[in-house]
Figure: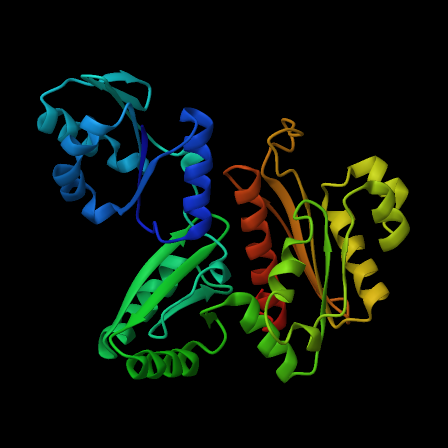
Length: 351
């Protein structure tokens, strides 16, 4: 029997779970038991369950944040009275018939996700800093959260994306916290339980529409919008322009630019945005073009290199080059989320 332990700060996020499970299956084959454990509870959980799992497993894969590896390894050695064999940042323990492997998720395992996959409790919401660093947002909001009995967490922070989570001790306390946050910071931080749903709502309130031009995300941004009720009010069409020929024919991307700069470039995303707005008549467009992997990378544009943009019908635009980590599906999820955040920055002019 093969068993997976995934120890992460925010192990409730479905794309992270999917990523960890796919990785474990690639490594071990079929996974018979899966345990997702919050970092703070990991040592206690392992103490209670490890001996039992060893008796019933041939392989146990423990995926942990890098900064917890040494602590977990020491705990296992003490608990089982067995010394680890270490190869770089991977620890192996052989106990009877069972092999325990302790390591990080590959490529530093990004921990955030598109939260629209989740059913968020009513007293919980995600907070997306727009034009302000995640840690700065946390420090600004922490005193306010304390006043309103709201627990504040940094769900994820990287060079690309920052996400906070606010959990009120009641719906009323969360509501009061969010109202005061909006009064103080206006639209510098965007609260949402479901990002796609929230985008639909603000567009509908302003009688505006959005379109998509997607290459590496393959329609994911359009999918998350159209899976929500009310999407037809703000979304008429999106274009999946996977090939250069379609970029040129449908979005009027310059053939010269495609040949000179490649599809994964700022100028191509700019022209994808312009073409999508022209074709759809929408008020806003978002576009993605990049290398989701696992193949196709180069020294100048490694796997995970994505150009993402947002533009309004007046020609105001934001286009950014980002570098995401993870497997193909995870990179696509992150790209979609980032495109939504760029739209919000443009919508509220926080850039």
